Amino acid sequence: MKINKPKFWDKKKANFLTYILSPLTFLIKINNIILKLIPKKKFDQIKTICIGNIYLGGTGKTPTSLKLYQLLKAENYNIVIGKKYYSSQKDEMILLKNKSNFISSKNREEIIRLATEKNHELIIFDDGLQDRKIDYDIKFVCFDSKIWIGNGYLIPAGPLRENINSLKKYDGVFLKITNENSNLINTISEIKKINSKIEIFSSRVEIKNISKFNLSNEYLIFSGIGNSKSFKEILINNKFNVVEEKIFSDHYKYKDQDIQRILKISKKKNLKTLTTEKDYVKIPGNLRDEIDFIEIDLKIDEEEKLIKFINSKINETN
Image (tube, rainbow, N blue to C red):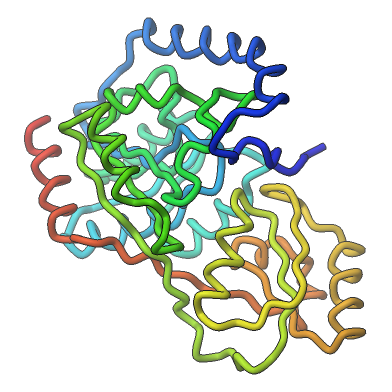
């Protein structure tokens, strides 16, 4: 059974639960030591980019992967997006399939083989920085700039898959900005102290289909994503009148009764019902008619600098 992310993970300071759970982080530490010791393989036939995270969930990997796909396709790269198959992440795979040239398999090496057979020259992996076998040509880490690293502890005492010092081995960082007061300067300073050579790119979420909404309406919103706070913030920043919110666990599989319950509340209170595109694709088809979703577009600051950086990294590995 899926559970919501513990709220104490995102506190800036450790609390009692953090200290209680800290001894259990040795499992993650051992795993990360093993990751360092196992030799990883690069692939000469195709270039690889990984968009991943070390903070668990809600950092914008999938929108960033799609944006990078669009930018590099415009540069005439023969490109594909790859994602390891997880039955619990079908929502993200549906979005990627709908919006890109997409390959999925239960094994990332198999994805590379399939992409190579189709003569693709570049593959973007949505997730996979912790893969034990693949040494990607370019490795990006995604963060939500407001949450940053939460309390800074490893799972289960905090939200981190790896210690923040692991930024030393990565090439770039994407900082998703949903709030201009997100302490961005300090975050960038912290990153640069760890890795002075790492490239940092900020991104902002825009609502592509905002013109279809009547902002004078009152809305009930619901989501089952890694960072539901970010979804609500985007709506409020765009002047949506959010009066009620229902939050589910990340990748939650909606049942008919879940949606019927939401729609019953909306009708009773005369509210419009709104969710994310990622959640919408999971709603049973017969219950979608009375629900809207926002379609987002990621805007990356300094796009030309990003493309130039990627080109230089790819060329240096030739």
